[in-house]
Image (cartoon, rainbow, N blue to C red; front, side):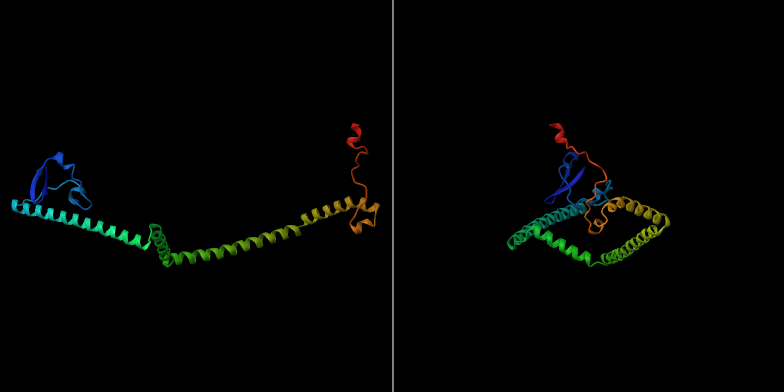
Length: 194
């Protein structure tokens, strides 16, 4: 059974009535932590004093809750009159938090580390680019590539030689009136259909 105090009078309540009293935050800490421990032996007078103190503390808590609610209402009213909206408060909180973060030692160390990493990455990419350029130059200077380049040049010369042999003067001015390499039929497809 559960003992409760109402306005200084101790009442004995049965288990069916206990469910309607829901403890608030911090209230009945001992019962919310685990199994109840047997109450130490005390006189009826001590028990009555504790019950009265319990009622008094509960009333103080209720009074403080009411005062807090009134203060919160007053705060909201003042903010409304000043034009402070929840969005403005959020912006201010974010700005302050960002300033706190950017001035923190951890942020500065991380920023410096990332900056150094960026410089090292830039140097590494530059080195990779230089290495690739050197490799392309090495390939271009390799005997196999030189041989391939010469064969392409020879093929190009052979392909352009017949055209320039017909009109040797046309090779310099860039306009070629030589016959095409592939002969097209004389009759157009539209003439054959008629």
